[in-house]
Structure formats: C-alpha cells, structure tokens
Length: 167
Image (cartoon, rainbow, N blue to C red; front, side, top):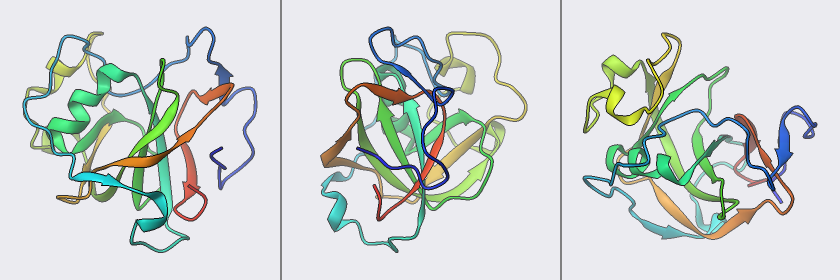
C-alpha cells in the first residue's frame, strides 16, 4: 500500500471506494480517445532510476483522464502546492491502483502547454480555473508500472505526496 511522505492518511484525504464519489482534478471528457500514446513502455518500481528521496506527487484520475496523460505526455488542470520530481497516477474506478509514473520537466499554465487539443476539449464541466497548472513530463519518461501499487479499501481523493523509495 502506498505510504504518504507528508502525513498519514485521514478521513478527509480518503474515501471509501464503494461509492467512488470523490473528486479528481484533471481531464474528465469520457468521449476522448488518445490521438497519440506516449507511454514509453512498462517498468518495475525498483527499476526507476532516481533518488529514493525524490518527491512523487500522486494524483487520482478516472480512466477518462488517461487520454490526456497518454497523448500529451503531461497531466493537467491541477493545483500544486509544492515542487516534486515525479508524478504517479492513481486510477480510480475498477482499477484502484497507482498505475503510471513519469518524471517532471516543468509546470506551466494551460496556455503555455503545447497540448494536442484545446484545453477545454478535455473538460466536461465548465472553465479551467486560473490557478490550475499543466505538468509537462520529460520526454520518454511516462511508464506504466509492471507492479502497480494497490489501494485495497480506500483511495486518495486529492493530491498526495510520497517519495520514490516509498512508492
């Protein structure tokens, strides 16, 4: 099970997956299929070449958000509170696993991101808030985990931080 580096989970940070009613930031247009697939391949967590103390931001996403991830080699429309070196994606729904990881290149506004589509095409609900960002990955660093991290009874409702060594 994933251990958070900043604090132990609380009921405010997790919800029961039986209802899966928690919010997930990010793209949510269920009708989109990825134009491109930038997943470089698969990797085991122990084979990720990086400092074990590197900070990993774990974002929850619905399966519908994976099109954005795959076609843009980025994650988007999220609020971030501190710097981090990697992004890991916890896929909600029937998956319930941290399934993807990528190394961060930079964090930019949606207008500065070179996305495959107009930003609003990725959203089903309204506008993108001014404080939302897009996390651009280092090219070729997006991998699907061969040994995904399961959450058995709860999942993170919001961004969580951990370290590469604890992932």
